[in-house]
Amino acid sequence: MPGGRLTQQERQQIAAGLADGLAYAEIARRLDRPTSTITREVTRNGGATGYRADLAHRATQQRTRQRRKAAPRGGQASSAQPYGRDAEAVRDYQEALTTVFMTSGLPKMMARVLGCLYTTDTGSLTAAELAQRLEVSPASISKAITFLEGLDLVRRDRGGRRERYTVDDDLWYQAMIRSARANDQFIETARQGVGVLGRGTPAAARLENSARFLDFVSEALIRAAEQGREVLYTRTAEPGHDSG
Image (spheres, rainbow, N blue to C red):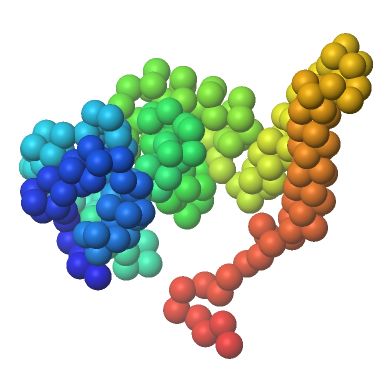
């Protein structure tokens, strides 16, 4: 499978595939690229309806030039990468993770903040640290954190002089439970509709079946989250140590 950055010819093939209504996975197969590469490329360059190969290529070239200009300023931070990580590889991975969050429904800035937090070993940064790493204003960080807090995806720690924003293992569990409980209102309202529309009628049957389905799925999801919660706290071996 080829590596490296997409070529201009590949971007033209992506644009042609999108115009033909092909799925990202099919475009990726034809280019012998990971689906995530195509998803990230399209998402950050106008989306499926706004993607233009020439504009995407120029935007990538511009980002590359900006990174090279910023290299002297960020040289110390890059050399300080823990565990011998490659700074550019980490940056590319953070972009890929951000794209995954965006395709799951998060707005771009919220996805960038979450991606930044998840790629730090502490899982915790201050607003100033986030603003510096993402090169955005503190106001943008504040807005993103408020949004992510509302979804239980980030926790705000108020100890010390500065607030820290944290992603921890239990947040996934809490988000899963919240997602399951989000169906409760529809389930209750659908069941009320059965009485109004008349049990046995096509409309009532549709609502009743939807309520039963969502009720079953929600309960199964909650049970699975409870049973698998301990997996979130599994500790892997430290780098450089033999886990066997």
